[in-house]
Length: 133
Image 1: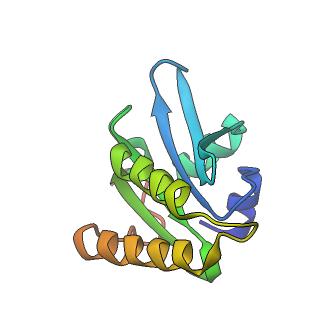
Image 2: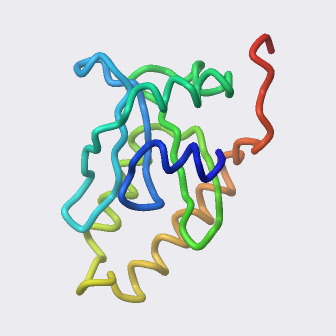
């Protein structure tokens, strides 16, 4: 995902998960916050353009899998993750966040979360997949 593609999604932070919601009949984006998972208004055209360039996004199971994006500290990691794992991250942030910047403990917990996730889930390739793959 290029910086331009990420910016077109209009998300306020560099950590989010995107999935197709049956009740909302569209792809939605959520991001973890000290208040829990926050719903963002996702410009659907931006998502459609991104999905058209990456066939893996079209294969996500509705209401079950999400694209978990970690662009914190310039990492640029993208995971196909079960949606419950994404909400687990949201709960972890809500539980450990302190003060305005979160405190060292929450950032340590986030790093640990992604280390564990990386060990059991392959990071999606940054190379674009062919549409006819």
